[in-house]
Image 1 (cartoon, each protein chain N blue to C red):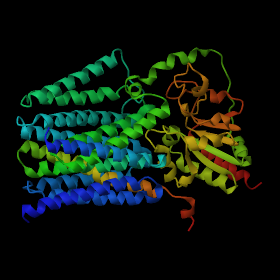
Image 2: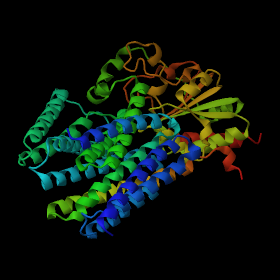
Image 3: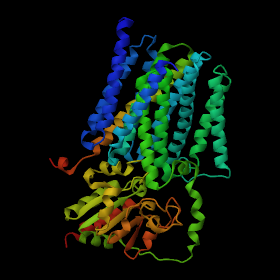
Image 4: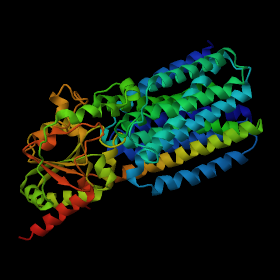
Length: 465
Length: 98
């Protein structure tokens, strides 16, 4: 085919791909149309890739094919066999791959065109490389923490923020130098290394409970890196897809920050682990009421409405299928069972919803914080499974509490509160949860999966009487 | 600034607004699939990687390009597949019965 025909054909393919990408996100808005959205995205992607393969600059398909085969061989099994509890890890890893691709393409572009890069292309290239490199290592660190290969507690040291910010300043300065002097190729590896290093140090002080925000932020960076690549390659499709990804990550991080009543800078530079010291000073020993699974079962059975509050503890214990059994057992007895989902429950946005959906719980039973809070006041039982800080009433009234002002699930307003928890150790923020000391609270100590299993068993044993 | 560049900046601006408006409407229920879908979409970086790997201008760029094709194909294939796998799990009670 002649170039006169091919070039417009490629552009038409890109335009259709752009429309399909936007439709994909539009259809994702509701569960009923969401799978159509995935299909639209797939067709758009196919069009874009086929269009690109027609490009006249391509002289050999050999390595492209190798890349496709290897990438599919790694990506497909990961998507098919990975357990749903590992979704946050996979997401962090995919941000790393996306950022890596941007950084590699940027590096190749630099060495191909230096020193004839226009000033503006160099600005875009520097942005692409900085975002790409820091997101690559940052996401790998997040992956390591989520997979528990690295300590999940925030790691802090004196002068951490000074070190991080000076490193960033150095990286930006060398980027600016490269923009002014694109021919300074000896500086290029230094620039990339600084970006990589900054990514590592940025994530070191981030703890597990901040992961939903950080994953969203890294998502946004990976998208913006792709968008910058679009400027370098003068490809509008890339600019748009990257902007959509960047916007999505940004919206999610804002939602996560609001749900924790914290700012971006506070999440990134104000390691939360520091406040623990004051928590023990209260002195007075208060008692909690411990209960057995049988007692819990008899209360649940007598209730007319039960609201279950899942948290990261449910994910860790892989208790979602047992929770479904409990849901079935109670629903069969005519109990109205709903789930209260806090935006930051778990390790990434929407984590709990995916786990409960995996366990076949109908999604119309999963309610977000604003919808469920008025209902909690009328509920007979609120059953907290592995959630902690998001249920702490101190956030509402205790001005000295580090989580003061954070929107919480009003679990304490339910008639009876049951808490399944491994031990009395405080949650991530290192704060005592006063919920546990309420008169109407009963504690069920143990592994979430085992305790829920015991309750289900007690329900079925008692059911015959 | 060249006219091309100005046009690209407009495109970025408009795409950002479209993104905000469309994504704002996504139910919190689907925030995890949202993240994996946008991740798959941004694997469109494969377009840049394909050209670098296929141009074969130098050994270095061919290697970098091929690695970039691998990395973005992982996201592309894996991203769409996991999103679909997750979405298949979201059911209402009514649909479960028959």
